Image (cartoon, rainbow, N blue to C red; front, side, top):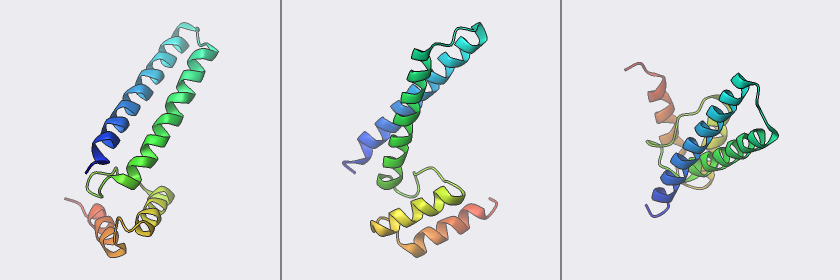
Length: 102
């Protein structure tokens, strides 16, 4: 639980930072005023967001962690099983439940 609160906060802040960087770049593109500084800010925000997302995948419980598809989901599953965060059969049941329409 101790690790979850800062993870949630960092993930949320990272999402806001990325959204703001994207908005600034879009506005600059519309005006024809895209600068290297804005590109650099966007790249930094994307890298930070990716790192925070990776941390969340290891720390947050299955019910909270964002559902991923394809290779990303397989990698997440392998990492979480290896770290004994998720039991192999528990993760399999969750994936099957995700496929079933509600």
